[in-house]
Length: 448
Ligand SMILES: Nc1ncnc2c1ncn2[C@@H]1O[C@H](COP(=O)(O)OP(=O)(O)OP(=O)(O)O)[C@@H](O)[C@H]1O
Ligand SMILES: [Mg+2]
Image (cartoon, rainbow, N blue to C red):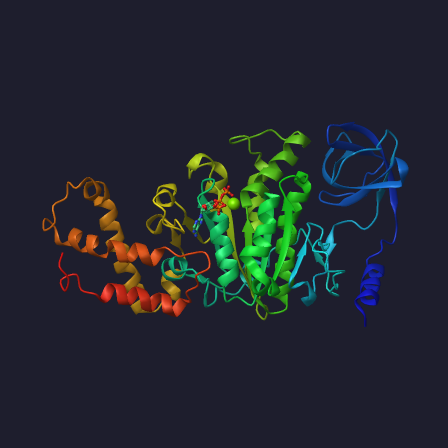
């Protein structure tokens, strides 16, 4: 059956059985109140305002006040006047991802934006506000995922179904690290959400970082910073819904999102305009309710399905790792990767601060040998870190402490191990081998 016939069948399946009409009773800024709709709406539902000139403006229900529904539009409100009809049809927004979505770039509504023609639609419908599988039915995290980045593979090993955050201040290399993993990973399917980042970066990411080969096994969902907050927030939900569809087909999915902070900011904009009072640092309580709802959707699937391994970037405002969004996200995820501005300034990329980063599932998924190797390398780094200031100042005299001498000896090779060019790939096994080789050189063999 051709894509067109298939898509028409799918669209007809989803036509609403009844249409209910309300009307616009007030507009303040980007917030529209609709009356006469009691009982027809619930939060998160979609509807259309029928504006002048036959314009249909898609809106979402974001709240209720004095018996009226509060709607927020997905675009400009031109042509809307008092009394305009509000059409409520099929309620929540759904998408129908299919295998044919691989290699494609879509917007927050799951519509193609890459100029490669229509998308095939799957028969299974996914609501974008899906719920995570019930906790007691979820499988345990699976085997290791090869992310192609040495520092991650060796020191912050990620398992199938694990969720990790990449935390850093602005311009320290979050997006670059994410793009390295998108390109070099061995995961079967990647679903990449570019949420609220710069438009220029989205194009560069797809064409330069991901490349043809990476794109062929990926679906990219894009909403740039200039789009309305509803669209940006929705792009994050759509990314997870696409990942869920591949998970349900038994695939091990890698879900990458840049960035969760932009999602939180979009939610903040939405809830402030509904009149929700801000709580911490201007963030509203609903931001902290939405974050776990989004992030919990990544993770292992139920028995018989695949998994979603999630890597989410978090912009740490003012390099303060205790700011509210970072703190909330860190508490939800199973590990955090901290990028350090001081390391980036020294020119070592990716600027991962191994000592401050942790993967909570790692000790269980590694072999005993690997754990010993990693623990030794961490110990050496930590000893060096403690003495770093003195060593740089030249105040430490070699021979004073054998442990510090050893840490100094291994410092440069370990730093070299951790730095990796953007286009350079190292798989899991060769990463460990290289680390073992470095640590096998005896410091006593060399002249200290
Ligand atoms: N692996 C790398 N190799 C070389 N340079 C890098 C690497 N990673 C990051 N950089 C440098 O750091 C700059 C900022 O990186 P990037 O855009 O990834 O940061 P970011 O944390 O995503 O920033 P923002 O918070 O603005 O989104 C890049 O333009 C590049 O110069
Ligand atoms: Mg970035």
